[in-house]
Image (cartoon, rainbow, N blue to C red):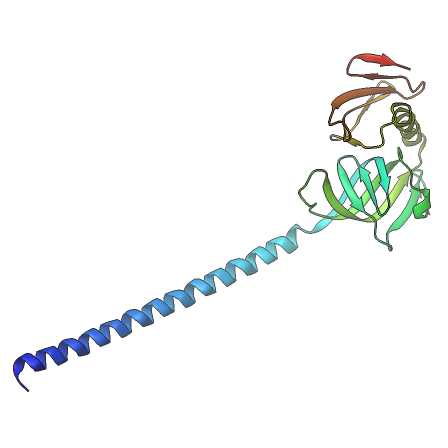
Length: 199
């Protein structure tokens, strides 16, 4: 073999060696990337598990349909094993799903976070119907308003405000898409929608 052939063989060997090293390096980078991705996924799963926590939403039922109810701006699915109770502030008694009706003030216990949609969505674990005097007066006023306005698809936008013997809230009529503010007198049930008085 002449010198040129020897150099060519040596060059081939070095080229083959260099290609092998680069291939191994690329493979080890891929393995490192896969390990990093798996670690990040595991971290995300851990963070998601941490985010699942006991939550409570207090508000009013504005829709009851089949196996779900709308409280404020959250649809809660009602599983068969949901716990229903009544509370007057001093004593809590067992209730049944048939006790639930539109207008009631309730406290909903659920696992968060909620599904991000509009309205938001969650699954109820415990429904506490608030039966203290103040809650019943607010519920009666809201129920009278819903019935008089024939709002079968009302959604409250946020928490209602109670002050000076009236309850007020921003709401959307889901049938028309109209958004308004209402203030309802807790004693007379007269109300004012966006500045217009009604009886």
